[in-house]
Image (cartoon, rainbow, N blue to C red; front, side, top):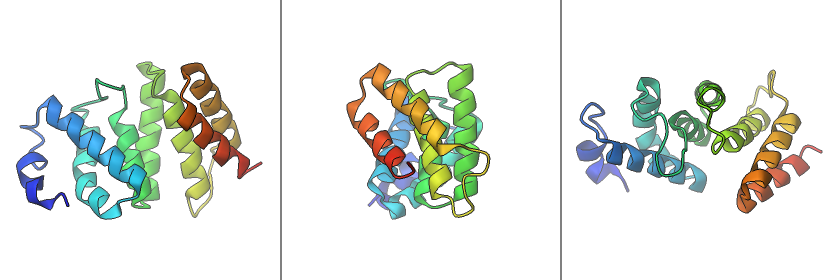
Length: 157
């Protein structure tokens, strides 16, 4: 689906403007949410590099962190160590910026990663993380994400 325009739009990060970077992150997030692994596989190397180089720390229109989106892409590809690396960086970013808009989403994804990883949650406490995410979603009136976090919490209760 994305191959035809990939070279023209995505391969040259040095020449990429913020508008194209915003589109790249929106595509990556959308494809990861939809479970489109082939498209995520196409986008992930650029998302990974965009996050590594901090070329676009967060999207201006919704404050979504690039490391969070790269973590979502890595999770969609079941690249658990990469996902953990990106989400650790995303947690650091939401704490230090601070980015209260993206914080509950990052925490929610950390809980999801802890539950999905074949090697277990490690030092993460998914129940505690989901409690924090639910509180953040309630404060921000984000009903769909609130429902998703509560449904995930119900699976571990």
